[in-house]
Image 1 (cartoon, rainbow, N blue to C red):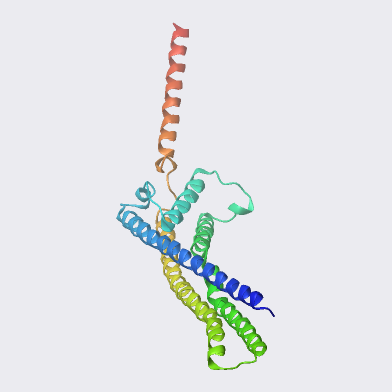
Image 2 (cartoon, rainbow, N blue to C red):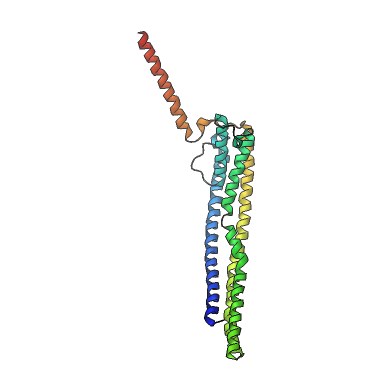
Length: 252
């Protein structure tokens, strides 16, 4: 085993650990910003939603973002489809309005859960394997150091301490990389549970509010569909008026 090969393997191990550290801190920063945005948007939407006079008024909220707003949007869309009779008789739309609403809300919540959990597998992997990667570099470095010492024929402290001390650096780096990864993973797992509990409670409350309104949201009052429906009514009235004028002229 040559000193060059040993040095290359140890340096490669250190490079891998440094790269893993960069990825770990980048993920921690990204997930931290994500959770700050989620907390802000959920709080703002919660204030607007529960401040509305009715679920019908809440369906007209605009410029809302965040997981809770998306869950509510799916719920309103489902109720509008059911009220407008646009649902088909396929497997996706089987069941009554409450069953369809519950299924759609659950599907959207699973999507939000997937978004919350993205990146956490990388943190868990880095936290699990980094100490072992560092230990591998240390073991390999010690093996190379012992081989060099045996070739030199000298086992004094000055000869042994230097190479072995350098090899132990890999273990220290591995532990230093693993600690923030494990801490970040545990922290975000806890935050995800808080967000998920909030969405679960919100979905239950949404179903209860929809039940009070008989699972009906008027189509013409929901978002941008108001202008479309109103425009169609106006056009129909204008056509009827034109037909009446033509009929009067014909009789004249």
